Image 1: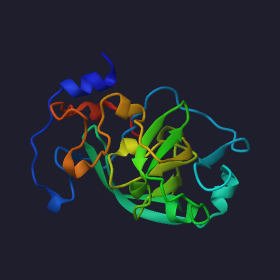
Image 2 (image 1 turned 90 degrees about the vertical axis):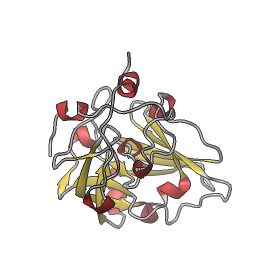
Image 3 (image 1 turned 120 degrees about the vertical axis):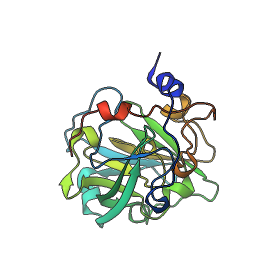
Length: 221
């Protein structure tokens, strides 16, 4: 039984109203930052690393690590909500806001979706409107320190208003698309939209997420 199947078959906690509605239903608040990943953690030579954007008007746009670091740098304070039922408030992510990254990138009018690509062929599909939402950032640092390798160094996407699997670690590019297509976890039964306040965990509404499995994970913050 794979990971997605195990999660689907387990029971979740009772939904309650807490923290003035700031904590989504079915979530447990933690002060730690659990490490959840599938497969090996990549290592990089930053001189060889790049980030690419395709599907715009014109040629593919490519950034080196230094190119991204030379763009305007910002800090976002946001809450994180993981589909495995943990939430962490007031996280400080530093990096490049998507509005700055895309300032000179022309997106055709018929583009409605983005496939986010990470290393080891990981993907997550996102509507363009969610990528362009306020506070979305390509982050290199967390709470004043560089991201650790297990949390996505050198860059990870952070989309605060969606479940955290959409915030791709070890990000390598955006593919702008006219039509939608499922990413890695979406192909394995996870919800296409991933709104934590609607508990959009699985595509099958009858599936539920286990309660305490995340507590067995390592932490490095």
